[in-house]
Length: 321
Image (cartoon, rainbow, N blue to C red; front, side):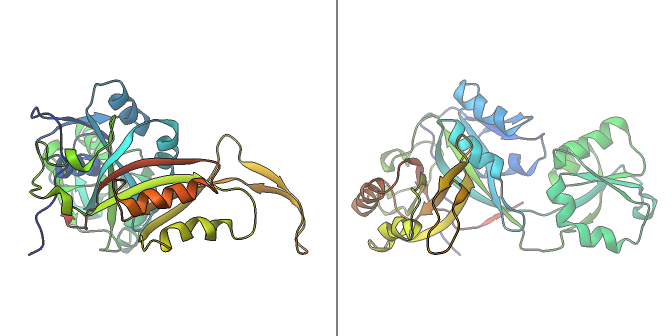
């Protein structure tokens, strides 16, 4: 057996209010409960609402998806990280286990409509095609659990939702099929957000099972920009390689406020407009470690913009929906 899961620390013994996007029964609610087992889950209609709930003190934390092993990054949340001043204080990975839900007594061959989040529909496309029902309409909605709730509330006969087993329990629906995702290796990584940054000294608060904070492996997420020029990205990433710091992720996003820059032609390549990028990077090091501090000081010398999004315990995948 592996090590016990590291539940995310809270400064207060009171049950934390944890905001998530979606309705009760959403996969994000399950991720919030895995991160903070004693929490009070607080549903929000949109990702923006979860950020706002923490900023406005109506929630203590937010748990939101950052990337999926099949669908890739959730770009909206990367953009929101830049628009808000919250700190990443934890991560949790959830294995997505899709179910086909409908009103009790419904048979699969009687279905004429399936609703779910667009990614869930895409992840079950092979299964739906295999049903052989050419008249089966697929309808994209904003939330898997919301699709299940709509069927229950409106008593929609002939309709099914792709959602979690927990959603079936909440809304009184029957599970017609389980594990219908085309690829079993379907994992979503979530981030936990707080108004205050996490330090190694605060890891042992209520809800944490740490006994030796000094040995907890930490991860740091940061974002930076670079000037135009040959080898600039290589130089930026070298600040970590030179100090034996492992980089686990890199993601680029065009700058929203100044997306284009004019460049001169060089080595036969014509000049013109090119994108300005932000680079999001995860490294396996905490901000209290000397090597990480030196690497970021080095990176500041070549980066017009640099921001640490948070340091937090690195979590190996172990969660099951």
